[in-house]
Length: 332
Image (tube, rainbow, N blue to C red; front, top):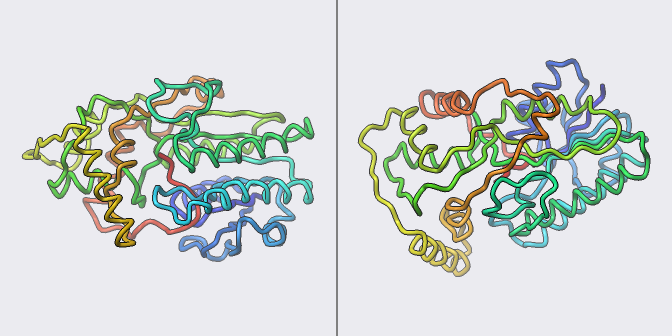
């Protein structure tokens, strides 16, 4: 199959392209930056440009759409709408004009909001930020495209926070803080997190190219869900940290500190690793139900514990290159 991967130069996309090539697909990567891993397959351009997308993907049989603005500190805020919603419109226009009948779209569990007690795919969306809101709006655009022709296949995947080798996202940052012995717990640590290992989700995204006609929305997470405290203990074991600090800040104090950093960022124009929204997300319950995912027949190649151990081994027990800085997303 000829597959156009939109946003394939980054962390998830690079691994996905590896998997697609291993399965014998012909791949074109369309991204705003060249791929460090697959430069020969990359066409650079703007995801909002129908003309540029068409030049890259008019011969494709399927599109896997990863590109998104996803960070918490995107400025101007209008970029969420421009890229996440505008990009969805451009991809569906490409598919319409080129006769592409198969799209896989990576959305996010952020469409549900925080502290929702493991929502399934039929739960009422309640996004808490512009990222989640614009991803939900993009879902509607893709669903409208799919509804126009019963022969079309649309798979919408809502991943939880994605981690793995080469990533510099939430799990890596937490492991780095633990490794440096500078980690301070905010809140009780009893809140649970759903997480997704990159080595598992790319397999599912590749599998989704074979989905039948119609629409399928699935959450994605590797179970079982861990409490924040269990995650920290697993990371400490993997890092061989035996004399770790057990300092803990009550959540209200942590949020106050986050607001102070937000004010400092606004005044100085700098980005800081601490913010109120990051503290809030860290201490929130962010779990999802994956019954529908398992009902498709999907089974993870790697257990969550093994995935965490592989990630720590790659990032902290030997030198590894930094994550590719492409246009795919790191969901949280």
